[in-house]
Image (cartoon, rainbow over all chains, first blue to last red; front, side, top):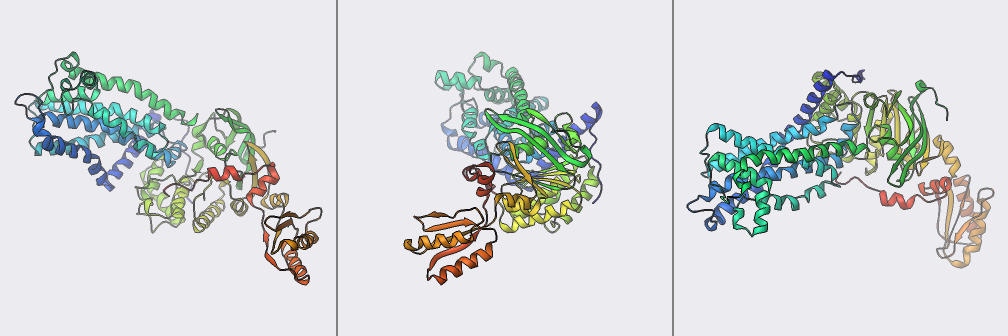
Length: 276
Length: 334
């Protein structure tokens, strides 16, 4: 057997940072390998938004009255992008729960690697995954006739805002995945994800909903992001005229930051408490 | 307990305490594992075996007591401990989608070996654990035994000073169990100290140099496997009479071969008589011949080895069976 020296245990700050990044990248590579080996995962995860596109744009679309002379496709596609980002926290939660259930998380924790990499690696790979999801969705949207009339910068900024929402929800996903008893109960989170994604301005303007539901939908972070990117793409807006709808772009930054401020510390605390 | 010299012991634990809510998982457990030996931790589920392993592998913090593993304190220098141990928990903790080789290379990089050494080490371990042919396949297609060997290989990346195996064969079929046993025996020849938890008496018997029986988070006894079996008692003879009227004759025949000072116990409803014996086979022959001479036919006659239940009954005064069954968890989806 080759003799292998144990990893240095007294690391100075620079080495710690180096290994925190290197270990994070090792975990990210693991997830990218998953993706490469199972491209069907992407297909499955995009299945729901795709079916939704078909249903809403082509089946209900003719009956959907968003505003006078408004092309429903241009209204629904940015909503679809936002909804896909919103549902993403499920993927995070399930992946975290699977690793926890199968003892992979414990194996990582019993190794001399940077403990933070388990969480940061998850975050980075989920963002890369989300970017891929968006690219595929945007390609489909373009194919069926959706266009961004905003400038290049606005369009890029819109995609950044979408990823910002996904980023904020990663931490909710990590927290829920660590709290879930097993993989199945993490999967059941869809019952939460579904209304979170749907009670919003994604498919229909909140102003057309009953008052209380409309208010809920208006204040939903998913609506803020959906409306902000609609504005940036130059796509039609729900046009309710309330304060929250007038300040969609601001809220598309504020909401994710607020969610991160709440869930990131909770997720990190929960991870550290696995040993308590 | 005074601290044994650290250089002779790979694991030294004194008065380990750990509570979960009101439950005392560890309640003053002491352990001293001599370097280079296989040490079995035997006990019913809920005895504290898994908690002990989780404490010693730095996964769970201690509420009281102290423990040193490979010469380093688990609470004060967890990172130093992590660099010197391997852990194989109750689940085969490998990635099911990466290939066997990719798994080992990933763990190698996380042990900070560098890409080239991680690759070399992975190839070495695949060869040693008989996984070279399956190296580029995904563990989701492996048998339970193969997956467990990959799991063991993943624990061996750094040639650990101490390897912890927490119920390594739970949920495996007999073939898988013997594969794992062979792999563990191979490790000890390399000088690795192994701490093994199990609720299978035969597993502890086959692999361990010493066995500590623990219950309710405390030490019950510690001995070699042979010594332990002597404490628990050996074989029992068991005879089932064919007819109720034969029961007294059968009881008398069993009483003649029973261990000195032991009385046969009989169950009138099932017509069953049993008693501990010191030498199983001669006793069996004697009873069979004696009953034949008296013209009594029996429904069944045989020898029974002590079951784990009886070990716990003998050592702890209570049965371990109830908890064991409720906590029996053949690995889901393995």
